Amino acid sequence: MNYSNSPVRRRGQTRSSWPVWFPLLAISLASAAVIHGQEPAAAQKAAPEKQDTSVKAQMRNVKFRFSESVSVQIRALSGALAPVGEHPFPVMDDKDSFKIHIDSADILISPRDLGEVLNAYVFAKPKSPVGGVSISIENGQLKVKGKLRDKGGIPFETVGTLSATSDGKVRLHGDKIKALHVPVKGLMEAFGVEIDDLIKNGKIPGVVAEENDLILDLEQVLPPPHIEGAVTAIHIEGNSIATTFGKAQAAKQPAKASASGNFMAYQGNQMRFGKLTMEDVDLELIDLDPADPLDFYLDRYKDQLAAGYTKISTKFQVRAFIKDYDKLNRKPTPKPQSN
Image (tube, rainbow, N blue to C red; front, side, top):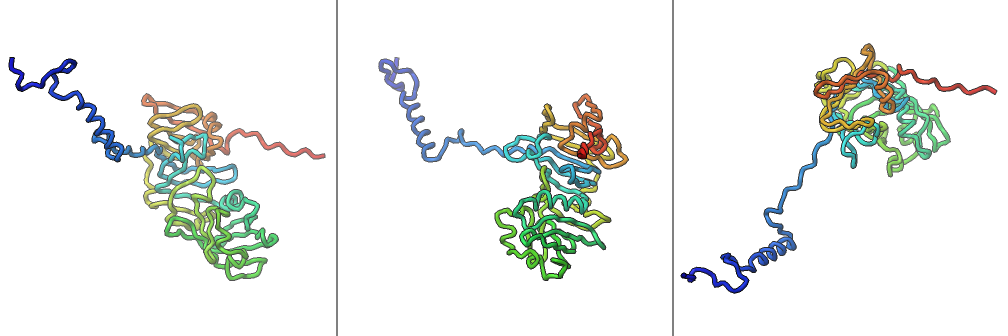
C-alpha cells in the first residue's frame, strides 16, 4: 500500500489530515482576539433594540381626577401609557409606574383646579416664597392672587395673558402687578428675590420666573400620573383654560375604538389592573351614563368597576361599563360632634 501522500501515523495518532495541535491553535487565536477586543464574527451580535412597551391610549369626554380636588376635562386625547423607570408595563394601581404620553389632546382646566395644583403641589413646601394662591378669569384674562410668605404674608396679585412657549410650556405674562395693593414694576420687585434663588435646586419645580412672566411646565406641575407632551396653544374659553397638545385637528379626530360617547380605550402590549395582567391589551372603560362626562378617579377605579358591569368577547376584548366617581354611593364625611 502506498503511504506517500498520507501523513505518517505514530502510535496514538488518527487518520485525520489535520495535526492534533490545530484545535489548540484555533482556541488560542480566538482567545487573543477577544483579549484585544476583536470577537470572532460568530460572537459579534448587534445590541437588541429596546422594545416599546407603551400601551396606546384614546380618551373622549373624560373628567380625569388627579386627586379628589384636582381634575382636568379631557375632550379628546390620543397617546399612550408609557412605563416609567424599571417598570416593565403600566400598572393601574401604581400611578408612579407610568406616565401619560400625549401625541395630541384638547384639555380644559378650571381656574380653581389650577389654583389647587399650585397650592397643594407647586407651592406646598414651607420654604416656598408664595402661598395661598387663588386664580380667576376676568374679562378674558387670568387673575392670580397670593401671599408673599418671605415678606410676612404680603398679598399680591397679577392680571395677565396666557400663551404657549416654543418648547411646549405655558407662559403667564403679567400685565398688571400689585403688592399690598400698590402697583409694582414686575414680579421680581413683588417677590423680592432673585430669579436664580426662586428656581435653583428645584425649589419650585415646574415654575420659572422671567421678568414679568411665569413659565409653567405642566409635565412637572400636575401630580402623578405625570403627563408628557408639548403645549402648542392655550387660551381662555368661557370660565376655563383651554390647552392644546400637539396638533389640534389630530386631537379631534375620531378615536380608533369601538366605543362611542365617553370612554377610555387602551390597546397593545401589557397592562396590569388589580390581580390581572392583560396580554395584547384591548380594554375600554365606558361611561354608564353618557349624558355627562366620564368622571374617572384612578385611586378609586375598582369601586367604579364594581358599580358597573363588564363584557368579554370571544377574542378576550374587555368592555367595562363603569359608574361616574361622583355618583358612587360614598359614605358622607362624619360631622364633628359639638360639645
